[in-house]
Length: 399
Image 1 (cartoon, rainbow, N blue to C red):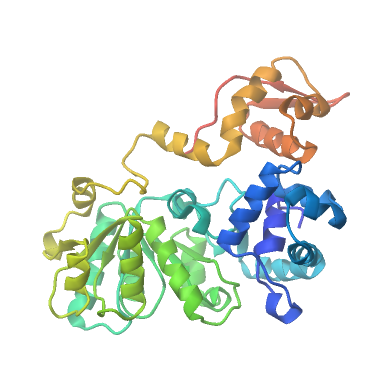
Image 2: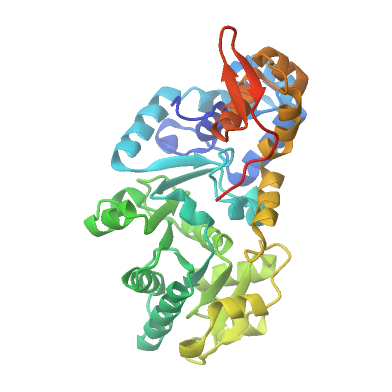
């Protein structure tokens, strides 16, 4: 488990449901984890990593929690060995883990979903694809020829315009759009509700993953069976990753497509476009509720449509400048808030102890930030004795 930062390690221990049911664990949900993190940040602990170094008896006082939650945290933290074995097994299969404390975690999920963003994600492929500009294409599992053509054409046009296709990986519209985009030479991010482990066993998918054209993601355990709850959660993750979501076909007041679309309209996460057709019972109703209609799919210019519509305030404007995008990232990664302060402080050589005391953070946190600054070639590490010194004073960029 040493490949994870201490904060990521604690996040996995407290939020992953790997072997949870079998062992009687009750991992934290996204909302409950968000609440716990706030308590930690307001406490003397300051960060989740410090839970590893804190006596159980001190938790109620430090975090203002009851005995039941103290026992829950203690029990979850104690499962490190079993969890490590399982994660190693997944890694051998090609499945990786990322947490909200990692800089590679998809920014859109944090920005748009906030406290509902999943604390832990499992993935196979190039995780940077999740940060690319693209559209989600969703719809019914049972789809007719018209729906197949609309889904396929949308995916092909997205590829022609340099956009990724985001999907939920379900039978019907999802799979059709994925296959069409990949056949056209595009890239796809498929956010699964279950069976990531089963999915990556398919030779064609493994080849696409190795070529950097397919990213599989899931907030559910890689070996988890299908559940309605996971599928409903998956819907909002697909929406949040996209610049805009296109509904090809929806039933009226039933099914996952209707639930996902109405939830998005209610919360105004991303712009919603719905195929304007009478033959799908839910489509007209979604348009009446505020979705933007589209019909001439053959002549559709997706980027123009996305630019031409007024984006919701909660949505990231992916047509911003690179600088503005970096500013968004700084809002959610404290490294970008403190790096200039660190660089000012280490214009002359400073020890780790001096740095952590100046920043008033734990040694682990100071070490983590210094490691990133070294990777970004902003700070150099000297030896005999070990000290740190700024190379240049400028914040890192993101490609």
